[in-house]
Structure formats: C-alpha cells, structure tokens
Image 1 (tube, rainbow, N blue to C red):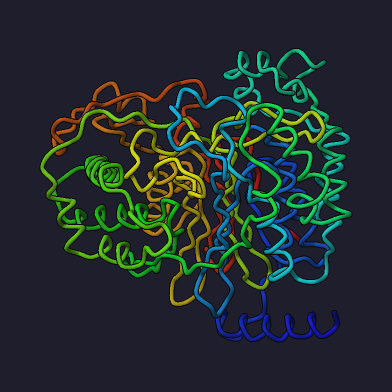
Image 2 (image 1 turned 180 degrees about the vertical axis):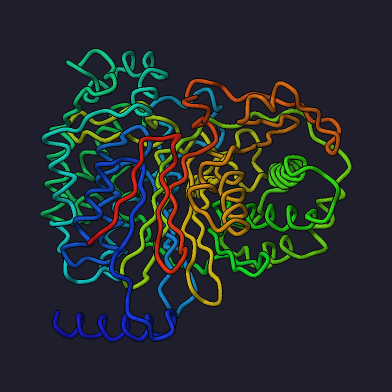
Length: 535
C-alpha cells in the first residue's frame, strides 16, 4: 500500500506539472451532480483525501439511492476519464443481453424482468476504484454515505417528485416490489416527502463487506438469478459470473475551433456529438440564423445515425474515422431528403462531473434506461432492474443492434471532455436518450464560444427527431418558420417537466469548466442538481 501511494503521488505531481505548467495544484475540487445529496457525498470524499475517481464511485452509489428513477445497482455506468498528461479514455460499462435472450421475441412481449440486460455498474465502479482510486479511501467508506442515505432517507426534490407523478400508474400497479419506493407502500411521494430504503441499505451493506464479487458470483448474484427465473427474466447466475471485466477504450476525438473534444465511442453516441459539432461549425459563415444552423446539424446527424447505424460495435475504428472526415460531413450537409417521422425513445439516465484539486477529471453517465427501469425489483435486494432490452431492434436479424444473446445494448450516452492546449477545460454530459447527443453538442459549442458554463447550461435548447424540430423557447415555437430547413415541423416538447421556462425533456447537464484560472461548476436548473466545492 505504501508503494502504491508513493507511485500515485509521483505520477500526480508529474501530471500536474505537465498540464498546469508547473503551477501549484488548485485549492479545491468541484462536483456537479443531479441530486444535492450525492454532490455533498462527493465533496466529503474529496475532503477526506479521495481523488475524483473515489468521489465518482461514492456519488454513483448515492445517486442510485437519491435518484432511483434514473440509475442504480441494476443499470450501466460509463466513465470518461481525463488524467493530466494522458489522452482521455473510457472505462466501458456497456451492458449485455443474457444468454437466454430470445432473438425472435416481439418487442411488446418484453415485460418487466425480460426487459433487463446484465448490469455493469457495480463491476465498473469497483474496477475504477481499484485501478485509479487514490488508495486513501476504502471500498467500505465509499459505500457508507449511500447506505446512510438509504437507511435514514432523503427528501424528494421538485423534479424527482414530477417524475413520480408522471409514472404514478405504473409505479402503483406493478406487482414487482415498486412499493419499496412509495409512501406507506401505496402512494407516490410528493416534494419534501422522505424516502427510506432499508432493503437497498442491506444490499449495499453486503456489497461494502464482500465487494463487487458478491454481485456477480455471491449471494446477491444468486438472489438476482432466482428472482429472474421465478418471474420470467432471462438473467442467470452464469450470465453474472461470466460478465466481462471492464475494458478501457480511447475516447473519440475531433478538433473544434481551437479546442479538442473527446467523447464516448460505440455503443454510445459520442461520435454523433462530434459530427454535430463539425456540421454546425461548417455553417458558421452562412446567412442562416443560429437556430436554423442547429436544426440542420441535428437533423442531418440524428437521421443519419438512425438510417446508417455503426455496423461493428467492437472494431469500429475505421468506420468512425470515416464518419468524421470532411467528405462524410459534407455529404451529410448535402443530404437531400428527410425520412418519415421517427419516435424518440423515452429513456432516462443521470450524469455528473467531477474534478479534483490535481486536475484528474471524470465525466460519468449512468442509467437504468427508462424512468424506473423495468418497473421491477427483487423484494430482497431493493434496486430497480434496467430496461435496456427495449433498445434493441426487433424483427431485424441483420441489423447491427438486433436483439440477440451477448449483444451490447444500444445507447446514446455521451460523456464528453474538452481540452485546450492539453489542459482539460470542460467536463460535460447529460441524460435524455437521443436528446443527450443534441444537448451535449449544444452545451459544448456554447461554452467554447462564450466561455461561460452557467450560460451554456442554462441556454434554451433544440432537438430533432425525424421531421420534428423540438424547441424549448415557447415564444420561438409559437412564431417559428424554419426557412433554412424545408420540411421541418416545429414542435413544443411535452410540458410534463416544464419549470420556470426550462424543460427537463432537453436533458440535465451537470458540467464543470476551467474559467478565469479556476474550476467553476454548473447544475442544470431543469433538474434537482447542485454544485459543490471541496475545501
């Protein structure tokens, strides 16, 4: 352990000197996450001597408690890591279809437990902690705050209460233990109500003692397997035992103006974020209005991604390289026709960003796919199963994303890191299914132009799905005529999550930027998030 800490200290000093030009490390770390409780947890970990990876692990577990509709032990987690002096890379937390998956099943036959892929979150978090954690904080100490929140509860925020209200019917009618998250086991919680999760607390206590191995081959794994078999799910003990170790993948990269933008490779949506930036940038000198430039860029990339999916999610390098060439971007710009309407999926997730005082940064996107995942949980474990099986293609055996055993779940996750002259200057990401891609591209471009992270996060956003151009600015929606994009129809987003003029339909960005010689965080007003600074 002493040798491990010494090596880490030497590497850290070298890295800081490389990136910060031999300046002293910054006096504080910054966290921006989707719940105030999780942000507070991360700050405490940094103040106890943990690094950004330690904080990210603790925040992830805390979000699984305090944002149960969006992420948790039953989901998947992706970490985009930026270590000073090295190129950003992804710790890949994709989830996989289990061995018993029926490739001929119809999508409407997927119910509850059958909607679930093999979870990656626990394995990914433990891998990150073991390899890149500071060595100062034990695994047990990283789970301790989340266990406390599950035991003693937390107060439901505005956005989280709105999610409960939207899904009241499915949460109160599911026969599979959703009452664990209801008030008095029967009614949805309102703003200010306290949720206590004793069953989840016991599961995490076991994880704290026995480590992630228990989730994949121990008592937790056996309980998952038995629950799945009893209730028609496909996951079995061998699926969990054989779940692969996380892999590290180089981040995808393009230059945008005088910045380097890095994002998540397949099966995520990072390449589409980078394409949008390139298409938008190509139009900077045109006479189109700014919203028309965004409409065109979003339309071209989203429609191309739907029509021409990545064919190989493992050996994707040549295909991605081609899609980021100027020739391909020009072809997108000159694409002649819009497809028929496509439906935007209702997937959800959570994103948070962390940077520590030594400049180690991590952008983390985690999900159980839909709100409240599969609307099912084991009564003995207390976490929602994910619903990633919904996102495969059905009845299309030759499609790259066809439902089949061992396939990676389709994803739009796009944790993103921006650098300038080798230094990390922006850490960003969002929830929101395909809207993740639209949102991350817009926030990244807006920050690079204005260098104001709060303005970039708060600014009204756009999204395209098929022929539909969704706008957050309601005045713009009432009067808009898109001259530059024939065939587009302006749409107002569903106002379920509309609050003070902004709408959580357009994501929930939790970002950190290097501005005026210091780290500054921004929490999206569309959600319940919070920025925290360590001392």
